[in-house]
Length: 294
Ligand code: NDP
Image 1 (cartoon, helix red, strand yellow):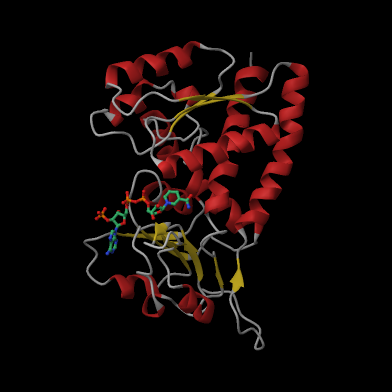
Image 2 (cartoon, rainbow, N blue to C red):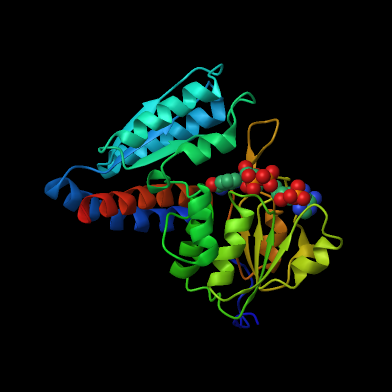
């Protein structure tokens, strides 16, 4: 059930993540100002373990965006060699601090750290990433709680571009806890008919060609090509794959998306900017809950 394209429409619509991000941030600013005037600024603590260059870039951007919005932020940088116990100690300390509304542990974590224990130790009430099992349960049940930033950002993008979801066929390629699974659940709650594909899916192209909305969250450069795309479909490319020359490319072949899709997200500039915007939105929402229900 695709949207009708006008006979003159040839090129796919580009879904601009920066435009959506700017709208979201502009809407958050007065909410931050209101909280600051009445109580205190929202507070976000970011834990960056070690010196992974990619993680350092993401964390810098998150802290910078906090500053632009007037959110108080704190960066904690334990060494790569930190034990699970010491990291849990840092998180328990942050759980106790009333001026910290949100805690984010940047991934990847070094192999000696037990990621599951880290997630479970964080107060679910400060889990800005929506990864705590209680918040995952809230997502499954479709009750309020912080949602994983990338998938909820994609839902915002679909909404703000007026791309209908209810009654549409959505195919999500990838079933990770941070993107694929929560994406599928959000689409399901929005009344799409959802298929989830993964590395054991027997005929990926055939499954994908059924999609009115195709979300690629795989981590394989250019895996999705014209044979996976139903003409006129909306293609959301979550993939961020760094090539040897440093260039970042998506999971979808952009020429094929441009030629066949009704709308598609570019890489970079599509899904990436939404993730940080929704991290800010989660932080503000949690701060409002902490401060306004106190
Ligand atoms: P994971 O590696 O955790 O998951 C990848 C998923 O893709 C798995 O479910 C895997 O299947 C599936 N997969 C792998 N190969 C194939 C294949 N050949 N055919 C079908 N399915 C396949 O990755 P993430 O979910 O963490 O991230 C996915 C991509 O999104 C990455 O490029 C990442 O960098 C990017 N990303 C971008 C963000 C943004 O803000 N733009 C935020 C988060 C991630 P199986 O489960 O069977 O192994």
